[in-house]
Image 1 (tube, rainbow, N blue to C red):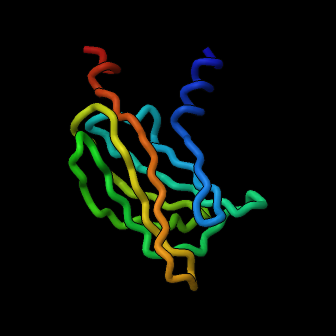
Image 2 (cartoon, rainbow, N blue to C red):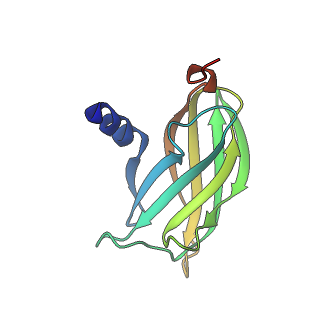
Length: 128
């Protein structure tokens, strides 16, 4: 049972490098379900693995079946340096893609990072 949960966590939190930073993405709470408030979260880490919070102008878009939704303003979480979040309620299960654009403070370059994610149907967990 613990092995299965660990595999789900690894698949749900992907990591990419952009603008010299490690960016870890995930939807919370897990599992990501329709009809529930979901946070899409991007954690920014410097090369030494410390949180990197010197970013600004964070905007996210969400894409499903070729249709783009947004932009949604990203918020830096006050108590968690380096963590940017957007809040959503998804009404359809399926494959999605989240793109976050941002600038490093003091740099005019706009960077972007895209991650795929899945939303499951809440009904698969409901018990009558």
